[in-house]
Length: 210
Image (cartoon, rainbow, N blue to C red):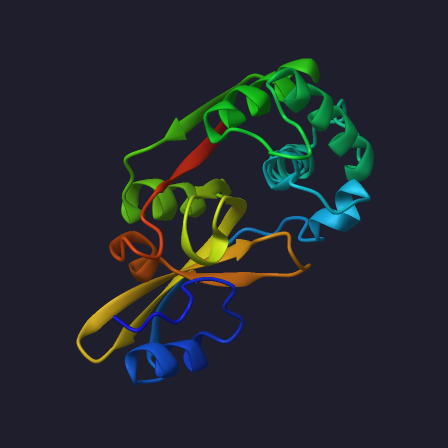
């Protein structure tokens, strides 16, 4: 398989042409969750290994706006500071970041502090239909931790998806906020999930407000 990076994609048609030899045809555009897509540096005020802390902050801020939760600060930078305090109690440090297994606990504790009951779960054996399509279709963004490849040891937020057809094969594309830059990018889910040299090792974190 062509080793073109599976992530950081800005032009899906161009990417599909370069990797698979055809521009592809969009056959389904799933729900697109609208949320804060500023860079990690903008939200936190510095450049460091805080991708998971920023991802949790984005998700909490999203539910604040979606559910009208007035107890959560409307200033995302203020919210970030508290999320970072909670993350530090779970071992977060600038030099090494956050261990992915603690993301669900951090998210749950932040919501609890603001009086919100939330079910937060780490998913280590996943499927596109169950852990992406189902969550996004219900307007629930997903935190995604990636161990290898383009997003090595990085945490991003999945906030949409689309399905493209190249020849006779379908290619799911994840719409993500990676935090390295502001705005949205795309991940080739097929390349991420199937090419062991590029990725495959990772996990998802889901959040359900009770």
